[in-house]
Length: 179
Length: 293
Image (cartoon, each protein chain N blue to C red):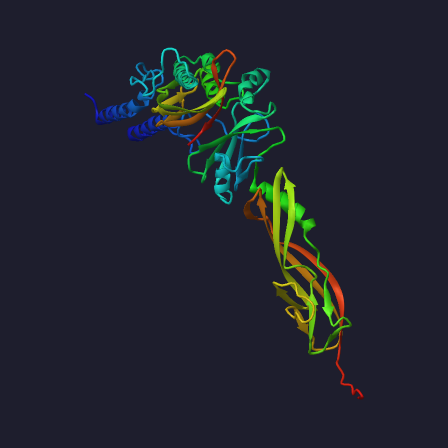
C-alpha cells in the first residue's frame, strides 16, 4: 500500500513533468519544425525572359530573395553572395547565415515573403529596387541548440542599388534600410 | 531531513533545473534586435570613396548642384532643418579589385569619369523612414557638406575678417567732469564680408555687434551701437571726478552666413569677441574764465 508521502511525490512528479512540456516544445531537435515556406505568390511578376532593365532588376531581386530563403534552409550562401559586391552591406546577412550554420546552428521559420518590388530611378547601368518583404516569426539556434534569437518577425523595407555588369547581369552594389 | 523536506528540496531542484534550462533559451537580452532579418543594409559611415556612405545633419549642401533639380530643391527646402538627416550613399560599394570592376557601371553613369554616383536619401526626423531624393555625381574633390561643417570653417575665417575696434573719445584732450565724454568704437554697426569660398561653396557673412565699454574701474555699459563723433552722443559717459581713466571696449560679433545663396544660418559657437584698449582718458574740471571783449 502506497503511503501519503509517495502519493504526494507522484503528484509533484506529474507537475514537474507537466512543467517540462513547454520546455520540450522548444526542443530544436523536435521533428516537424522545419521552416514553413510561403505558399502565396508575390504580387510582382516577372516575364520569362526580362527585356527591359526594370524587368531585369525585378527578376534579379526575386531571385535574390529566393536564394535567401534557400540559404536559410541549406546554409549554403555561395549563391546568395553572387548577387552582391564584396563591399555591399547586404553581405552581412549572408555572412550571418554562414556563421550560424558553420557553427552548427540553424534557422527555424526564417524566410522572406516578398510583397512588393518597386524598381525606380533606372539610369544607364544603375537602378534601384525598393523591396518590402514580410518576415514571419522565426528562431535562430546556435550550435548547442540554444535559441539565440526568438523573433516575432516583422517587415524588411530596403532600397537596393544595382549595377549592370558587362555580362548583362545586375548585381547589388549597396543597400539602405529605409525603416 | 524528513520526507517532506526531501520532497521540497526535490521540487526546488526540479524547478531550478527547469528554470536554469529554460531561461537562456527563451529570454532575450533587452539590447538584442527584435528582428535581425528585418533589414539588409549597413549603417553608413564616411564619404569620399565607393567604400561607404555618409550621414550629415542640419542641412546639407552639394557643390555645383542645379538649384532647380530635385536635390537642389530639397536641400533648399530643408536647409535650416536641425533635425533633418541625410545619407549620401554610393550607388555601388567596392571592396577590392573585383568589386571595382563590378562597380564600373556606377562610375559610367557620370559624365566625369572620375566621379562616383551617389544616392541621396533624406528624412525629416530620426524616426521617419528614409526617402530617396535624387542621385548625384560627385568628383574626388567634391564632397557634400552639412551647414554645420561649413559653419565651423566660416567661423575660423570670420574671426580674422571682422574689424577690430579703434576706440576714440571727445573732447580729444580729455573728458570734463559732469559733462558727457563721447566715445566711438571705430567700427561699423554691421559688417558684410565679401563672398569667399568654403569647401567649394560661395559663402557670404553678415555680422552685427554689441559693444561693452569699461569707462572706469567697475563701470561697464553695453551698447548696440558703436558710437561716433560729436554730435553723436549715443555712447557717452559722465565722470564725476577728475583723473585718468583706463577705458576699454569689447566688441561681441554675432554673425550669420549664406551658402550658395541659401540661409542665413547662424555662425556656430559663442559670439566672436575682440577687445581694444585700455585707452587713457584724462578727465578734468572745467573752469570759468573771463574773456575780454
